[in-house]
Length: 155
Image 1 (cartoon, one colour):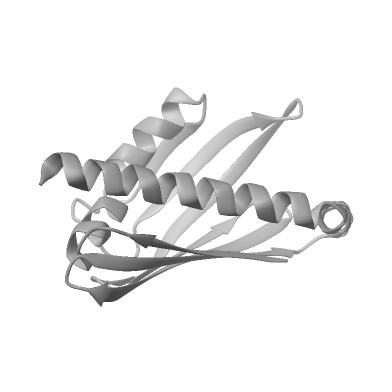
Image 2: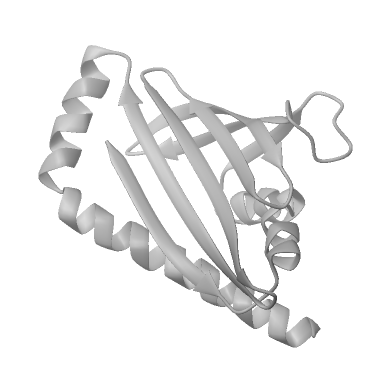
């Protein structure tokens, strides 16, 4: 199953990429939402190979996810791969400079089941795909707007 969205941001591509690369901010945000997050390895600087282990409760069950940064091509793209017990996912963030002060953010999320229960989950998600797609696009738009607001406050 694939979800994708494009948003234009009133900020230079370098600034947008820098905001997308603030992984400590994402870690703190996840912790505030009750997700246990631990960075794996000794990566101080942002680089391919960075990884996180996350645990959270969903529908009364504990879920474990391993997230890895598999591509880091500043200032054009980032790619993350996530795995849990039955589901794999790939999140791709692509940036395109439309002008010196405007950037297009393309976000793509691909989910793939690896087990029978995950396949059943994917079938139920397919029934709700239109609603999920709307929610995905709305969240990407909100995030892009927040990045635009942050940039205008910093400028």
